Amino acid sequence: MYLGCLLLFVACILTNASKTRYDGNIVVSVIPSEERHYKLLTNLEDQHEIDIWNELRRNGSVHVMFHKQKQSQLWPLFESFNMKPSILINDVQKLVDAEERTLQVHARSGQPRNILTTFLNYDEYTAWLKSIVATYPNLATLQSIGKTYGNRDIWLVKLTANSGAVKKTAFMDFGIHAREWISPATGGYMINEYLTQYAAGGSAKDILDKWELHIVPILNPDGYAYSHSTSRMWRKNRKPTSTSCIGVDLNRNFGYKWNTGGSSSDPCSETFHGGAPMTENEAKAVQGYMTPRNWDTYLTFHSYGQWWFTNWGYTTSDPPQYKLLVRKATIGMNALQSVNGRKYTLGSSAQLLYVASGGSEDWTAGILGILYSYCLELPPTGGTGFLAPVSEIKKTGAETHAGIVALLKVL
Image (cartoon, rainbow, N blue to C red):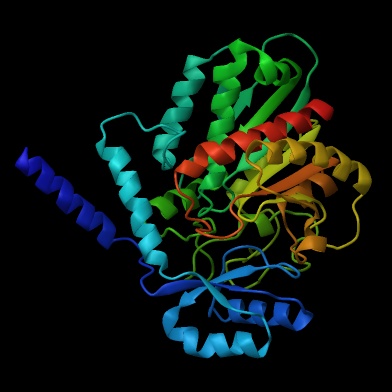
């Protein structure tokens, strides 16, 4: 017994020793309200002085991570630009350590890892998908739609009831950015809810009797696995580039208006768009699966910020039938907000934030012609940022599920 505990302790030390640490890193909130503020933040990010956690936005709080040794230079700079800096997180590593302790408690409990109560790593998530699909063979099928650079499967779950009716089709993806753990967890919650609640009738039955839901719960398997094993704040995929830097931002790699703004040609940048559009296995997998089929809606789920975005991302011009897009989304957003009372903001991403080209929702709208193409940025709006507590899984999952059910009912 003692030897087993000792080996577990040593294993934890070795595991933690191999992980990226964020000692001394802080997260600061700044308020950009002018074009020069945007340029300052993008220049600092390009110079690798800061890591922008949430998306750049107009007249709203932007959260940036940097080492406190830089505070003496960056703080006066932000103040001189009247960007109202304030500390959001005093020590990122403390939050990472707390998250790790929570995950270890779940691991040591001896109980099966539960999609609703902890953040599963890629292998655990794969095992859970196989198990729940096997439990509900009349409602769910599982297939790999491609392989990553690291040879991991990009899993897709198809949910529908065998009613024989002509059905509408929805494609949903989660986890395109590795560090956004609440996104795959929310995807898992929704899959679980549709399958376990179908027999009880209600909304799950209403949707699966009328829709085919094609769900990719982890679109960036390599990055997601790496964020669990090595570097918690990893964002991109894990394919080598022409430099020593690794990875492409998958949500800048899609082939509609690629590289027209809001992305980077620097392989070391967090928003590196790749050497050409649709170069990445993950983007190719989505393209290969979606292109031959007809779709009624596309939904992609990110974190964080509590936004419900329509296209476009590449331009501030309104997309076709913008008022209709907003009207339908408002129904979903109102249902979402009614669950926990958390408020979302709805509108075009480029108008509310800044231009960002190469996004998946622009590609589905611009190339595939899917009118109802939306992006949701899940909670929180601040606080712990990407390091959401496990208590958020059910909370975020329940409200997001309610919002999507309400949306699908009116499409």
